[in-house]
Image (cartoon, rainbow, N blue to C red; front, side, top):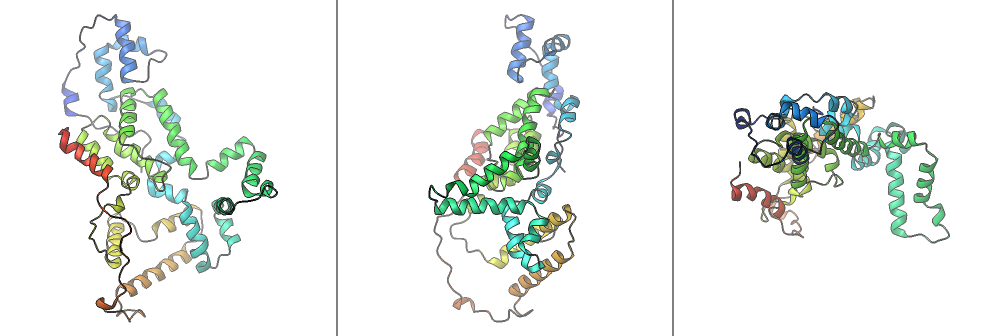
Length: 366
């Protein structure tokens, strides 16, 4: 589970070295103001006096070791941000993506005997998803000026205008938008109230350098983990650790379309891909369909029929992979199978991803 204020690794050198401040000709107050502007977001009420009492060197050394600084005000303000306490799997289950909702409605619903109204009652997010689909369809078809006033966009705007500010916020906070809202607000609150100013500045710096786009597909559910586990945890550590953490994090892999980074001559077998996928799930202590089950559990819904559906799907895939077991007994010989369509786009290592990996080798920075 993610923590709103994670622990920071302590560089060994930072523990031993004593910070020295060169003589610059500045007055003591000018030194303090300069320091607070350079390693933080500027002086706040009380900061000048506190640093004056501690001394510039002592304050700088403290900032280099953020794990020694109590940050109770930030912890108090972030306590209600529940998405910061959730891992990516929990975020996906609590705020399902449109693709999962569409699958529940179109594929799983009929299997479980749910009509669209029943599915909508179980998952209120489906209604908003249907409205978005309707708006896109009508936007693609185009509408005349005579009917434009009655289109779904206008109806949706009218509906929102009738909502109170509290109702609008409640609707936003029950959708995937909450993940981005709380992550953005937490960033601002930390910058303003955190006593770990240097850590916040460096977290912002490295996130800007190793950036991902929260609006791109799955990164909406992955960026919280990326910011806390890949960036923040290594912001004051070794560059090698930071680079490795960002390069291997799912948010960066998805952002750089890393599934396209493959041998151009690779000939993937679907059975082998399924085997690797199931092996990965087993390594994570998960079962196929775990996300779907968690979506139902979090809403207090019965999961028995979902489990039966997943078992049937697993039996079907096993029968396809093992034709001697089950009804899928007739398969074409390898030399008679339909040839695969040629790749429409050349595959290879993503250029941006390769550049990040090469950066460490070229600079030799630890």
